[in-house]
Length: 202
Ligand SMILES: C[S@@+](CC[C@H](N)C(=O)[O-])C[C@H]1O[C@@H](n2cnc3c(N)ncnc32)[C@H](O)[C@@H]1O
Image: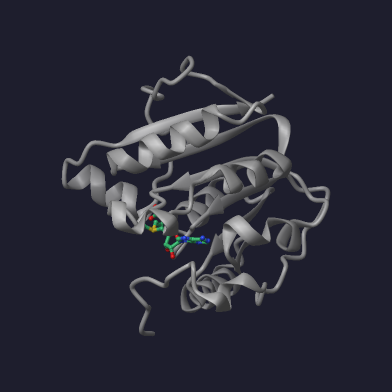
């Protein structure tokens, strides 16, 4: 399958929700990755702990299809939803709440000229604050310094989060989940620095 490299999230088409909301079992705890691409991270999480539900949000529709096909073949509890994460969290999740939210390498819009296309902004973080259960965690990682700073600023400026590493500080204890996203694996193998953030929903 030919996968599009990028899509422009500011295009009018993405304003309306075209995806299919996941069928969630309220008895299962929910983990969400925002901007999941091929969802390597979620598939590995699901293989480790298949008692939970894993939902990946993705703006590239062909990747959503790919993930959902793989979930069917493997039988792992992973679902991808085609959506624009800043705009559609209520349509995707309704009243459901997540135990954990991951934002792994939320580029590709690292150039300043494309700043308005970036995913982690105050609007996304306000949505994340509603979706995440109190006491639960938001984990962010990126190899792009500008994006790390944007994310830090958006989360620190939201009253619903506490930075586990201390205010305006990066998380220095690595990725604690024992699984890696594709971009994370690539960054580690090529020796790129990775900036991580760990926040608790207060
Ligand atoms: C660089 S990839 C990282 C993928 C994966 N998380 C990883 O670490 O390997 C970022 C993903 O976020 C998706 N994305 C960007 N903006 C988005 C948005 N507003 N809503 C949903 N997904 C978005 C992109 O299409 C892309 O697949």
